[in-house]
Image (tube, rainbow, N blue to C red):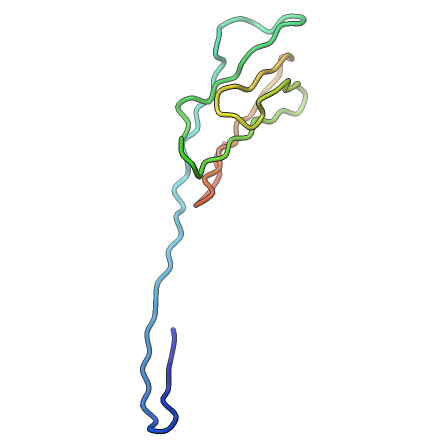
Length: 99
């Protein structure tokens, strides 16, 4: 609320504005691009196609025990070479993140 007062004559007026948050979670979808198993010295590409796209969307692939060779910040070009669980975090800079 903003209150403005004209001191010489004592008149005042007020106005307000409502700010709402964009809390819509971005869509997330993760899969392996090919159906081959990770074997010794073989790479597999993880694919997040189906997740929310856009200029305000960030992607981050993570793992606890696996190994990301390249592409951790890409939608569908994350290359891994260890069998493990991998997580795709999709963040909309205008709202929230979803895994």
